Amino acid sequence: MDKIAKKKNEKYSKIIESAFELFEKKGPLVVSIDDIVKSAGIAKGTFYLYFHDKHDLISKLILEKAEKYINGISFESKEIVNDEEFGKTLYCYLEYLCKFLERNKTLTMLIDKNINVCVNAIVESTDSPLYRIYKEIKNYMVKCGITETDFAVRFYLYVELTVSSCCNAILREHPYSLSEVKYNLYNIILNGIAGEKTAERLSV
Image (cartoon, rainbow, N blue to C red; front, side, top):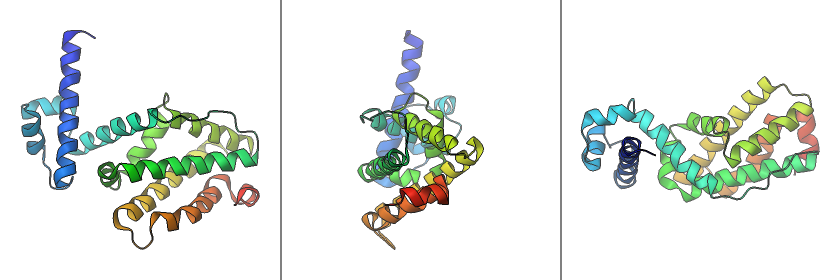
C-alpha cells in the first residue's frame, strides 16, 4: 500500500472508530456528524470524502465490524445433500446470528434500524464464511425445486424476521426474551425458506 492509500485508510478507520466510540457512549440517535469529525480530529469536508451521510457511515461501520466478527468464526463448509444437513445448517446459521447480536450490543442498536445492511453483508460479501453458508442453503433449495428468485426473497424475509425479532428481544426483552423466541423462530424460518413440504420433514 502506498503512502497516499495508507493515509486514506487511516482516516477512514479513524472516522469509523470515533463514530463507534461515540455511539457506545451516547447512543447513535444523538450523535451528529459534527460530533464525529470533532472526535476524529478531521475537517467536516474530509468526512464527505468517505461517506455520503450518517446513514452511509452506519452501514459501512456495521459491515466492517460484522466482517471482523464473522472472519473470526470457524465454519464447517460442505455441500448440503439431505434434509437433516439442511436443518442443522439453518439452525447453525440462526445460532451465529443470535450470538453476534448478543455479544455486540452497540452494533445491535445500529442494526435494529438498518436491517437491510445485514442482508447486503451476507449476499454481497462473497469471501465471507456466512456467504458460503448462504450459497450452500441456496444450492440445496434450488435442488428441491425452489427458484433462485423465490429463495432470494425468502432469505431476505428470513434475515429481516430473525434480526428484527432478536434485536427486540436483546435490547428490550419484550414481549419475549431471546431464549423464548429462538426455538419457534427456527421453525417459522424453516417454513419460510424451505416451504411447507420440506419443513414438515425438517421440523424439530
